[in-house]
Amino acid sequence: MTDKTRDQKKDQLLAALDKGMAMIHLDARRPGVRVPENLRQEPHLLLNLSYRFDPPDLSVNEWGVRSTLSFSGSRFTVAVPWSALYGITSHVTKDFFIYPDDMPEEVLAQAQMIEKVPTDQPPFKKGAPLLREVPMDEKDAAPAPKEPTAPPSRAHLRLVK
Image (cartoon, rainbow, N blue to C red; front, top):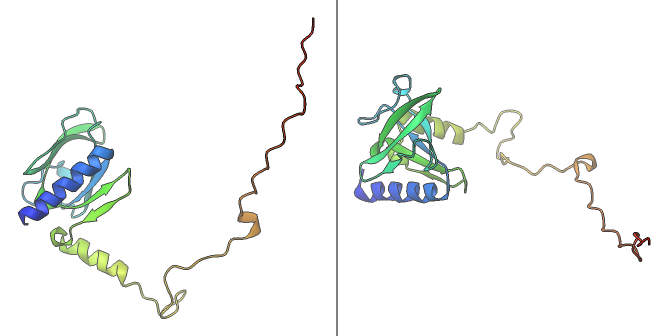
């Protein structure tokens, strides 16, 4: 991994964290990754990070990311070097940044399989788009907003002496 890629990952993660919660996508099998034992063989592990988590010990530096997170109610200090991180998602803006050069082979193959959905078998037609516009039934349509009524011409409350 180049210094430029590391700096891009760092900058994009910091920008996402400045806006709120961010999710990182990582290969937990890579050297230097520290996660709970039951997650160490995961090629696609997702971790949520935020400056607002308790304890607030999130650290993003030249090496990577460190933070104490909760796993099934137990706290664990995770460590993720930049070389293991291959995706960043912002929960706030829904932006997603991916680094395919750092993706594990099986995750990359799975992503390629999604792109190669067979379109020559029912219900797909060969050459037909995978997404199409579906007309909405009248019953599904939102009711038309009510027009505001005119205020009463005179006050409906009277002063009684």
